[in-house]
Amino acid sequence: MGEVKKYPWYDRISMKRAFAVVIIGVCAVIALASLAVIAVMLSQKESIRRQYDAYFTEVQLDQGVIFEYQNKEIPGLNGLIYSETVLVIAVLIIIVVLLTAAVGEMVYYNWKIRRPMEILSTAAERMAENDLGFVVEHKTRDEFGQLCTSFERMRQSLEYTNRKLWYAAEESKRLNAAFAHDLRTPLTVLRGYGELVGSGMESPQINKEKMTSVVAAMNRQVRRLEKYITGMSDIQRLEEISIMKKEYSLLDVGEELKTYAQMLVKEDGLVFEMPDREQTIWADMKLVAEVFGNLLSNARRYAKSEVSVRISCKEEDLAVIVADDGGGFPETALEKAALPYYRAVKEQNEHLGLGLYISNLLCEKHGGKLVVSNRKSGGAEVMAIFLIK
Image (cartoon, rainbow, N blue to C red; front, side):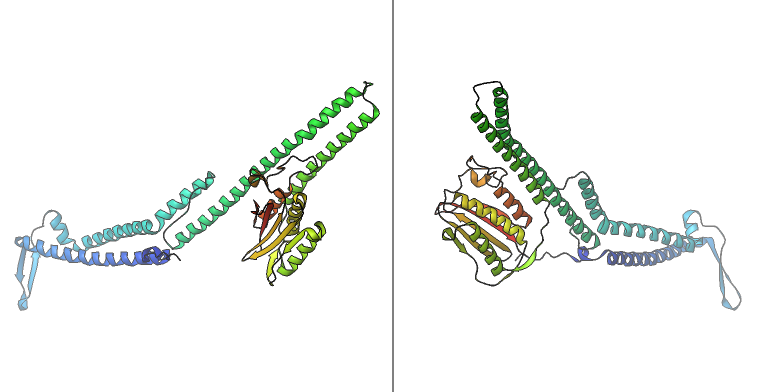
């Protein structure tokens, strides 16, 4: 474990207490400075009196009382200090108070306000410019430090949201590009058949049987286009879906998935492993089942004789692993298998290559991910991970 960072007292103290410390310090300085001013000025008055002794006359009154009077004005500043000592002391004390208060204000501002204000101001300007590539960090643990921490959490949240929006935009662009690319083939075929039908209207060489075959081929391409459009609608629906987790027993989930697998795969070709311990998980089983169905369909399509399913639950993750004993994924497909409309082999069927892409999308919505790999013993293996807390 790392060491807990320790802050000195002047970084931990709150702004309210720091203000009280500064006020106490200012008052102490003013008191000491005022006493010093009084002492200095009284001492100066005595010194002036001795310096201008000739300007004073002493007269002895009755009963031995001596009266002193000034028979000549002391010139310049010395005269002012001597004659108006109280006024001079008052003025000097006022100056001391003002200077000390100004210094105290500067000390408090530089101690508690200046640096966090600069940090927050800079952060606000950068965020206004949509620049989130920085960290709002302040070393104090006072109110401004807490505000900087809250600002940093807000920045992280905005950065996360921006990344999600950017990812969604990029994913949408990639999906549209893949959709447009795969639409070219059926459209090109339809265009060719359309030209053939157009030219065959007036050609005696195109008989009814040939025309029927062309129309049937055109209908197949139309159905293929309809499936593409349906696939795009399904993806849009899945991107907007909300996760609704409920509490389930791990054993019940395993039995439900096992029953589902037995419906899709022949029992003699299915190997199913699941935990035998009781555990409570939180999951959206409709979503888990949809991913599981996609993985089973793919495995069944490419398997030679066997499809294996293994359910594993560790800490906060539920892993559903589906494997087959087929040829496995080509090397290039290991990175591209979850892309929309990707097919390792251009099959002459209506398979669109959306199963793993949809499964990956649903896993991410459930806080997990999809991992595609090949087994050492041969065949493909796909692991769907779901966050179950």
